[in-house]
Length: 469
Image (cartoon, rainbow, N blue to C red):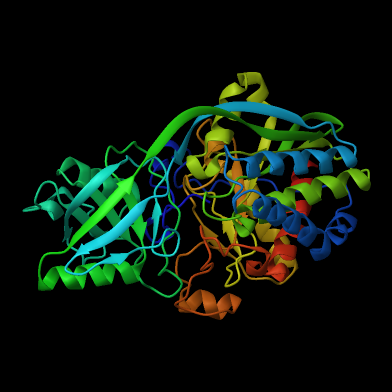
């Protein structure tokens, strides 16, 4: 799941592109299926899901702690998924796409040089944003409307900002990208955006700039930012940043497998396979890709053959801006797109302080209400409460929505805070993140709630087959 803070709405980047049928609540027929689904749901067990997630974590551990697109960890993740699909009897296909791979060519140096010295630690104290600019900076730190929840979101926040200084901003109110660009336009030598310090949101998190920057841009911990802001109130504060980066064009692949139906057309069940650069990405999104993989395996083993087929998609470079799924959609002819009846997106299904969240159909293409209602019916039958939420352009479903394909999906929450009302409905802790390890190195198998993961995996399997008929 891309880092587009849900407190400001995950759909900011693609909101204009997913406005199909806004406000539409037209009646649609109830979903019926002649294919038995109970055996499929029973076959998808926490033990098997854990095995896939443990394999993905081991891949990350052997490859620098990451499975990010463009790294050996992602290549090995693709190999694992393809191997599992072949063992189950599929013939997986690889859909190749090209993207710009960002890397730091040397470890970044970030240290305070005035009024006293302190060397900050990469990962613990700061994280370089992907597609940051590089450079060597020795400059004064200037807080930008730092007490505001929308620090750095408006050009007016920079009134009086001294050109050549380092802008210190706080997360919230707009995207990280908007803050960095505003700082760059106003002459900042570098831009620091702090996590906001709320429960579970103190450490720096991995994030991507969706427009290139020419200056160093980092996310810093709330502790580092509070320290710098307090020192800046007392007198001049200066930092040194030495950052060397490179961006090259590389290729990666999506993995596709098909379970044929008796008639043309298929329901597509997908999730992204890549992680962020600074973690193994086991909830985000090993949980979704493991679920897609296990549904595929068990559907084949049980000889399930619905009226329409099932397609299983494992997307790359979602964390860099939905690149893999967008490329896949662009590669399809109009006639091929028409064969996709519904898209079910699975992203972050095991958050430890979970919500049971179904994608809302409002604002999505016509036909999306059918998917939403199918999930509502399923969970009502299990007497499990749900929350419906519009995730806008925050995950791979948006790539399909932009061309008018019906979309839906499941989600258990990122690092936004759980409300008291949702805690009462689902349990867990109010005022804390759904997943405090979101986009961090602690997003491991130990971070997964296997109870909710099994519930949503069963729901995805049953609803996909019911939609396929």
